[in-house]
Length: 253
Image (cartoon, rainbow, N blue to C red; front, side):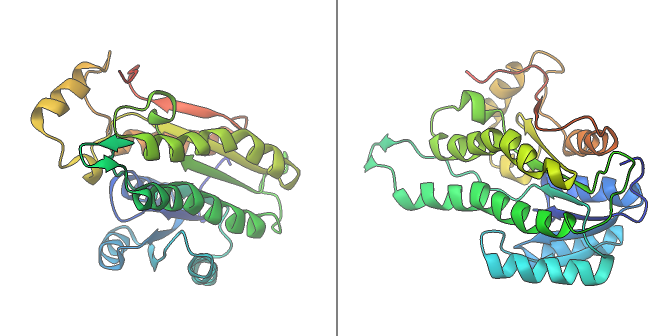
């Protein structure tokens, strides 16, 4: 897409962190942004600040996503871009001091991070596929999913999280191939540690260790850097079917 002006976009997990930064960057670029989040109060506040549309949505629920799509389309028209940032991180070892991990934590992580991403992608893509192309190449839309470097080098206690993000990485290319006939690109971004509310409870010594593991710059990533990469992916129509690491060269130990 050469321009985002008046283009309808959807950002899941839009109330905070990378989703919020992405929604703001897209709005500043002229897009009509629908912010989806399960936290209705928080998403309303941010939407009001950037002139976007707040939509309460549970990405794991088919009916909830269908209603969110209908509300977004009614306000802005059919979305030509979807950025999936909704996700959770629950750390738990396979076998801990109290025995085997709670199966429910694994199921919940997969449900939100993976199934939620696939659910929104399939339904949004179905609407995009019916629209007229936006360029001479026949591009009708772009979908960008948030993965993680934990997909490649998961750490202790990250089995569920790594499994969910690894699956997002694995489905990027086949999803791009599936949607190629519809003129819809699919990309994924795999960030390292990013300064988001998910990282707010990290102890200082752990934070220091994380930052020392980043070759350059030796710090956590910023949500705005994720948002900037989203904008570049949108503008460069030859980016498709790939996963881009955004981690300062870090490799998790």
